[in-house]
Length: 174
Image 1 (tube, rainbow, N blue to C red):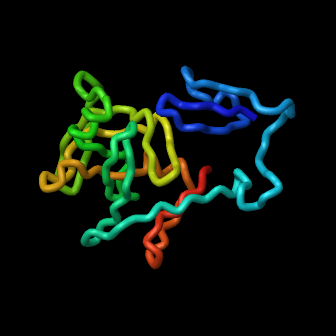
Image 2: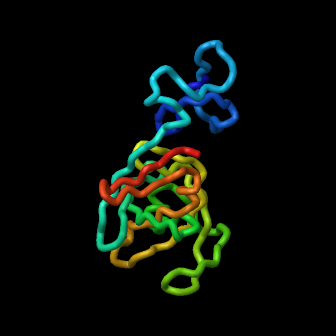
């Protein structure tokens, strides 16, 4: 088992040293070998780890609080969007370079357009953090310039379920 600390100071644990990003501070724990998937407490079994992320409704949209490289923002939960989409102002604050990068053509509800394709170093929803998430940089609503889309480039990494009665997104790591 390995304990590693990312550049933001968050502590992570893994049994797969290959999953630790370059530059992380790493400490090997214990002397046992093999993969760890269960522990004595059934609520802490790694294979069964499920996280509840609350959302709020604005009109017919589910709004999730997220952070992009540590920059807080709100995103519309959009299972019909292939990619995460973040507005240019958030990309800039998050240190994401969107000039001189590959442009991706897309078809939206508002017609055909294009947007810079980038990778988010860390996208966090609730207590769940994912690295290297493919995204587009584009304003989705002029009236809400800091609002993005939480699309499938993030959600596909999880088994997920939307509990509308409790207004939570349930995420379980694949």
